Length: 69
Ligand SMILES: [Zn+2]
Image 1 (cartoon, protein in one colour):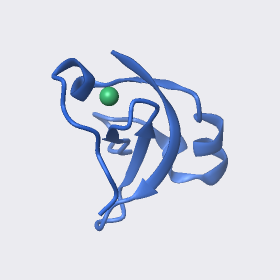
Image 2: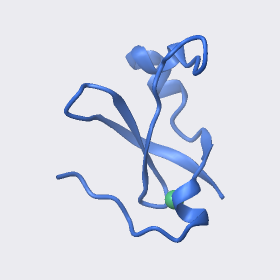
Image 3: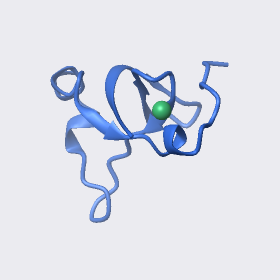
Image 4: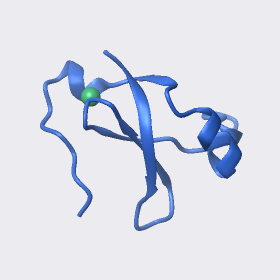
C-alpha cells in the first residue's frame, strides 16, 4: 500500500525515518549505489518529498502503528 510522507525524524543512529500517513515509520536511507536518495540528507529535499508516497510493507502485513520512543 502506498502512503504519503507526513513528517520525518532521525533514529538513534541518525538515520532518517519518514513518518507515513498511515502511522508507520520507514527508513529513507541514502546508501548508494543501492539506495540513492540524496534528497533525504537536506532539509529542502525532505520538505520537497513531504506528501511523496512510499510503498508501506507494514500496511500490507497489517503491522501496528509505530510510535516514537
Ligand atoms: Zn503503513
